[in-house]
Structure formats: C-alpha cells, structure tokens
Image 1 (cartoon, rainbow, N blue to C red):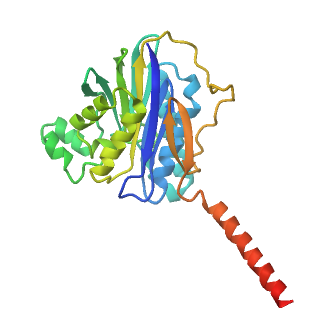
Image 2: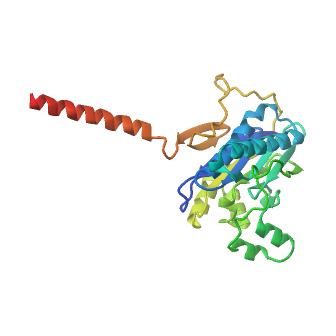
Image 3: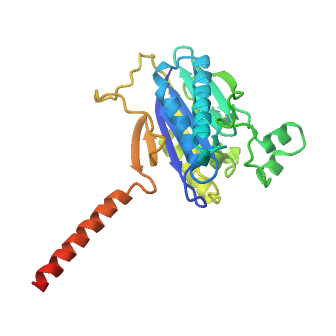
Length: 306
C-alpha cells in the first residue's frame, strides 16, 4: 500500500481575525498545529512547530523519529519564549502522523486536542485522545459527550507544546489498508461538527481528500466558524512503495521549510503546497503603488505651476 492523494487546507473561520493554525502535508509525513497565546504568540508557536516538523521530514522514518521531532518542536518554542518576553507562555497543539508504506502502518505522536481519525468502510474512528479539560471529564464519567460538545470550557487544553521545557507525548501505531482515509484536524472542526456528520461528509466525498477538505471546512463555518479550522487528509491505495525524495515532480530542489515569521495562507493538494497571501502580506506592494501615485501627482502639479 502507498499514500495516494493528499490535501491540506486551513481557514480563519468566521469569528477570529487571525489564523493560529499551521499544518504539514509532506507525504508520508503529516501534521496539524493549533497555536495558543495572546497577540500573535499562538500563530508564532504553531508555525515554529510546523517548521521544525517539516525541516526534519526527510529524516523521520519510525515512531521514535516522530516523537523526536515533536520534542524538538517543543524545545524550539520554549526557547523562543525565554528569549522574547512578548510571547512568553505561548504554546500549540501538535498531532504528527507518519505512514510506513512497507509495513502498512500509521504512527502518531500527539499533544493537545487536535485529532487524528481513520475512516474505514464508512466508519470514523478517533485515534487520538484529547488532552483537554472536557476530555478528562468525559473519560472520568463526569460529562457526557453531548455535554462536552457545549461545555463553556471545551477549548481549554491540559497539555501543549512550548509551555514547559519537557513535554509528555502520547504515541500510537495502527494498521492501514487500501481504501482508508486518514484525517488530521484542529478543534475548529471537531468542536463545530459532530463525528457522525464528519463521517457523512467523508463518505460523500467518495475518497477524494480535496473534496472532503472543502466540505469539512464549509461545514465548520456553516455551524458558526467560531475558531480557525484546519484539515489534512490523505488516502491509502494499492501500490508498491518506492523511495521518496524531497524534490518536486518537475525535478526542482526541495522547497524550504516554513518561515515561522512569514504569514501565509495555504492549500496543499497531493502533497503540492500552494501559497496564498496572508493578512498583511500585501502591504509592501500597496505602499509602493501609493508612493508612485503620489510622485506622479506631484509631477503633474509642478508642471502646471511652471
């Protein structure tokens, strides 16, 4: 078996001004990070995590490697917090998944409440455990799933990357087989769309990750879009595993890892990253246009005076 089509998409949602989510869609490695912190700290934390994961993608080959890259991301965020008091206390979730195509297995390392699901034969299975306040209350029997879905503190997480020098990382390994669809998502999806509806939308997409991503984000926004929503999906298909390279299909060199200080919006289809301008990225061009117009206006005015 091999990874087939893959897609990643992120959306600011309907209530937030900034997008603090980040993702990696670099088959056979995939990841979701959902940042937290005041001002731009959450956005920085998630992008630092995504950059660390993407930089190490070529070297990660097993579950231990996946855990190692999560710990590296944690250290990078924590050190940045120590160096910059303005972002002290920032953190992010991280759910990282690696496909071993030869073994037919998926290894996941997980911190926070961003989720990993496996969709198989019409059934959706949540693979990860939410490190959240309501998650703990549900597991202890003090809340039902329905009560948790509307709890006022459902977004409070109990574990995150970057808030401490060391982090406890959950790990799991599950089997994969052709026909499976794997979904990673931030809680902007899982808090707005129930699992049965996610399963329905995945089934309606007929295995197409790109169609499924658009449908899931549309459903989250239709339900209120209270948070940023990010999804990464990939399908598992029949095939003989081959050696993967980091070069693109046209032979160009590997793309650089994410720049944590550069704001972008992104969509990825079949492992190809498509960049879009993020908030603020158009200002330099706009300033240049305004300056040129001002110079032209002054020149006309000066010629009339003469």
